[in-house]
Image 1: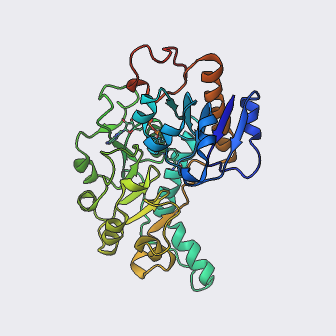
Image 2: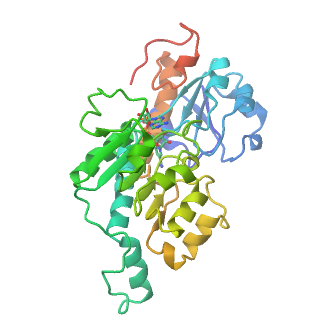
Image 3: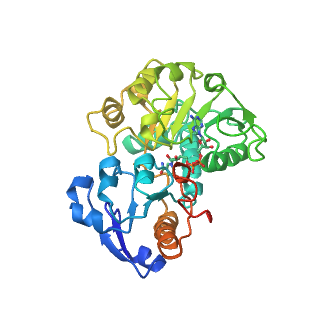
Length: 344
Ligand code: NAI
């Protein structure tokens, strides 16, 4: 059984993957572009475990002549052409349950950092410990109780963020057109059927939806203009959901108060990208209003272990026992083409 990891993001060998699937031969590559891997290697794989930076598009799927499964090392699977895989009989699974807590904590940490002024205080005291000993200069500090924490996408991470936000005294609202209003996991929060209506009420907007055709550019100029003046945007979902140029302009114009972005449209970003350039040498209107992190919301040593173990385990369950776990393109197969013994 050969398992290809085309874009391994661990420096050593596949020790964790082998702990989950000792029978497998792991073919480890550290490519960014599928073309850097010979066609013969793709063709040999019985399964592929892939990170988010490599795209499994129709052309790559066509190279997978033996593979029965692609597993996303992660929760979001926007880099995989689900239909192209299904057409070739390849099941695609994700690992949805390795870092929910980490991402929710990251969204809350960003919110608290901005609302408690930490970027401002850190920078000022590093520059001048005496002259910078001032508490009144952080621009976004505000009491949390009674503010509205608004979630776009009340799935696993959205709900984990909701529970945390409530514990800090926020009123929690959500917009998720794919969640039934009577879903027991959602009834405790204020539901909005209209995104723009929610944006007008929110003090914090936290994005937890997947990147889809519908959410690409969702937070563009129009949506940002509907946010309340001074509100904060937190994006731990996917970069292309936010138009970062429009966001920067809105902060400069004094409308959106600030933002925390764990994900960017291009990762790593182009240093000359206007938002990134402004972040590196902040003009006075941006000081204390922007936090960036390197698509790290998922990360802790514990979540990283769980992710790698579960990804290999998911491939092993299918290859060895024909048991499907977390299949995200099941609906694209003909009835009966995949086992109906989905386990979680
Ligand atoms: P999930 O599938 O449990 O939840 C997503 C929710 O978004 C669902 O309830 C769905 O109905 C909703 N949704 C779909 N389209 C929507 C739309 N147009 N508007 C509003 N809501 C919509 O997924 P989970 O595990 O909560 O993850 C959410 C996203 O977080 C992932 O798709 C991934 O892109 C991102 N993520 C980011 C990480 C990071 O390190 N920054 C790590 C893990 C996930």
